[in-house]
Amino acid sequence: MNVIGKFLTIAILVMSIIFLSTAFMVYSKHTNWEQKAKQAQADLANTRQEVERYRNEVQQKQTQLAAERAARTSALAAVETRARQYEQESVQSRQVLDRLQEESRVAVTSLAAAQQTMENLKNEVDGLRSAVKSAHSERDRMFQEVVDWKNKVTSAESVVRRLEQQNDDLTTSLSRTKAVLRTRGLNEDTPLTNVAPLVKGRVLRIGEEGKLIEVSIGGDDGLQRNNTLEVYRGDNYLGRLRVTQTSSDRAVGMVLDGFRNGAIGVGDSVATQIR
Image 1: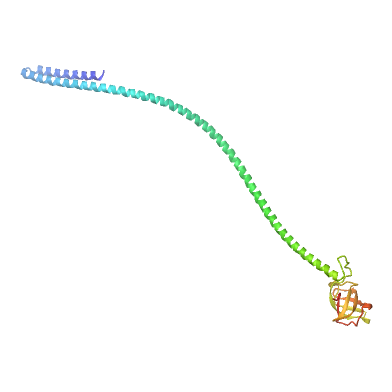
Image 2: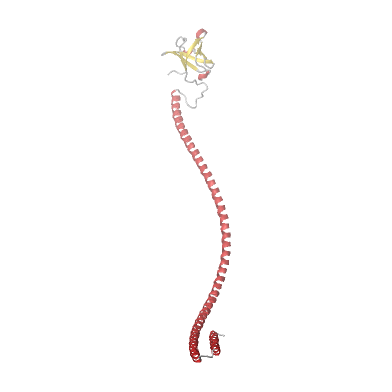
C-alpha cells in the first residue's frame, strides 16, 4: 500500500466515523429534526471541507511524493553514477596499489642491495682508513728519519767544515814546518831518531875534569841520547855537548873537544840550537 492509499483509507475511516456519529445523533434525538438536519448539513459541510482538505493534503502529498520520487531517482542515478565512479576509482586505486606494491618490492630489493653495497663500502672505507692510518704512521716515521738524517747531514757538514778548516790549518802549519825544516837543513824525509827538539836549559853541575856536564832538561823535554846541546853565556859561545844519558828532567852530556871555546860554568845556558 502506497502513501495515497493510506491517506484515502484514513479519509474514509474519518468520514465513516463522522457519518456514524451523525446517524447516532439522528437516531438518538428524534426531536427538532430541522435543527438537527441543519446541524447535520453543517457537519456535512464541515466534513466535506475536511475531506476536501484531506484531498488537498493527499494531492500535496502525492505531489511531494512525486517530487521525492524524482529527487530519489535523480539521487539514485547520481549515487549509481558516483558508485560507478567509485568503482572505476577503486579499480584505478587497486592498479595504483598493485603498482606501488611492485615498486615497494623493487625498492625493498634495491634497498637491501644498497644496504649490502653500503656495508661493503663501509668495510672498504674502514680498510682504507686503516691503510691511511698506517701510511700516516709510515710517513711520520719516514719524516722523522728524514729529519734525523738531515740533522746528521747538518752535523756531518759541520764536521766537514771543521775538518776542512783543520785541514787548511794543518796545510798552513805543514807549509810553515817545511819552511822551518828547510831553514834547518832538514826535510820531511830526514829521520828523526837523533834530531833534538828545540829546548833550552841551564848547566846544573860540572863533573871531574870538566868533561861531563849535567843540565836541567831531560827525557820529558824530548831529549835523547846522542843529541847535541850548544853551551853559551850571553852572546859568547862556549862549546857543544853530546848527551850520554837522560832522566825525566835531567841529562848528562860530554863536552866535544873540537867545539870547546871557553870554560863552562854552572848557570850557563844550553840549547839544542842557537839562532
